[in-house]
Length: 95
Image 1 (cartoon, rainbow, N blue to C red):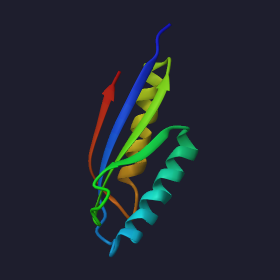
Image 2: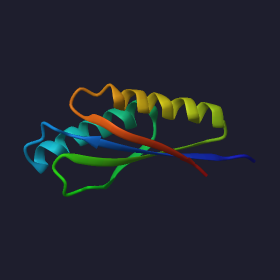
Image 3: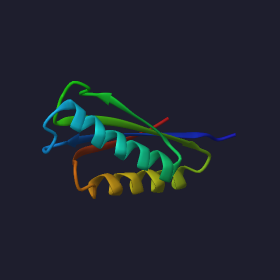
């Protein structure tokens, strides 16, 4: 049996967040939207105390590597098009 795990790291700059509460509201909204739309696990994994930076990890498991790659790319595209956060970097790892 072949199983693939794709792990996507997204780094955002959040210029309009004036407090950690603003940042957490924006990040939570994005996480909820992505998790609901793509059926993935997503968590903030770094820069937790930084007001204008967020690092998220998105995990997706399946048996079709091409499907996973396409779905993770759609998540990157959604992140790049987010109006309140600027996508600074993205990286995919495969296991």
